[in-house]
Image 1 (cartoon, rainbow, N blue to C red):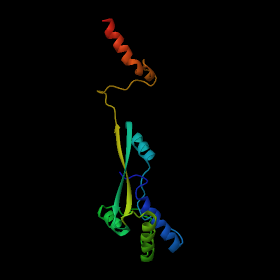
Image 2: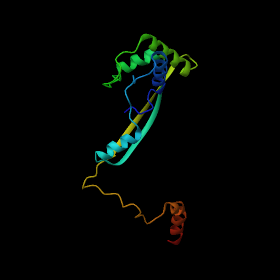
Image 3: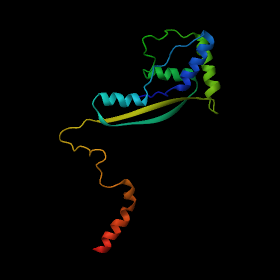
Image 4: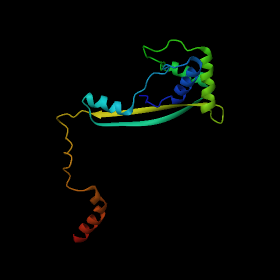
Length: 158
């Protein structure tokens, strides 16, 4: 699933251009989820032992319009019901110029950052062992560093 910082370059460029040209902005990229929201959703669905991991992948495009074409091909156009249906041509051209000026790579391409979340959760079953209660450990993690000494002393006494 795409994370909250996905396409921040595109979103920022569109907001700046639309604010300058039209006096305000509306979202033109679908909203993305925050990592803590995923944990809450998995927890409310009854999952335990939750893990959420994240990767950031940067893909370079020749320009903003090629990126938008790629997004459309991926089915990732804005799905919000209350979105503004039209973005004027001069605003789009201004956004492409802002994108190029603010984020251009040395080779002339522009980056698009994708933040990807991976989630896993478990639901316990009666046939599975349960984790021990918190605080029930009989050995401290601080003592684990001494385990080699204890093992070698045990071998000497045998």
